[in-house]
Image 1 (cartoon, rainbow, N blue to C red):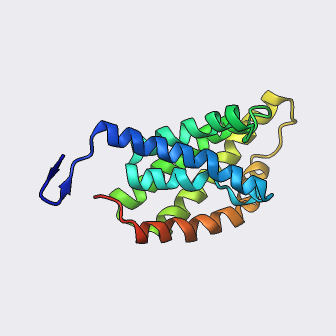
Image 2: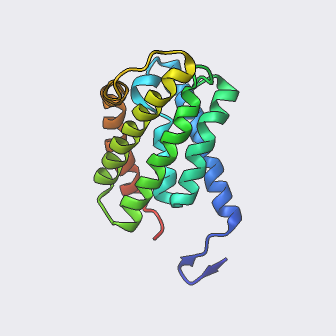
Image 3: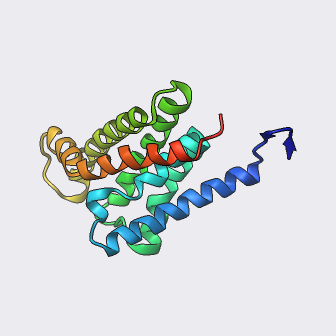
Length: 176
């Protein structure tokens, strides 16, 4: 398992890490929603960003895709109808993959990695919402409306992510 000071990650370790981030992605929003802060602070996004940074893009992709649906089924948050959970199933993997790419591959500072990931992820969320509006019986609007609404409504959550995730990363260094 160990050779000198280098730790080799096994598939069991990676699976455990993914399971931990999925569990955090379910429990953290429950705590935020209990305090009435869930929608504004995007708590599910935090473990997904961390999964991308700590586990790489593949782990982040799995955590981002599985967490919203599993949470929706187990807790009702995010709701399956309207299809918020399905929209987040696309948005959150984008967050994780980009966080991994920006931080691990491009070696950007964690604040910049998280900020850019959040920006692109929220734009994707708005565009997915725009495409889904007619599917759930809502009138088609300008694509700028859901994108802008997604960005503006998420500013408190993005601020928390840009502060909290880099703080965690500075305290617990990801493996290279």
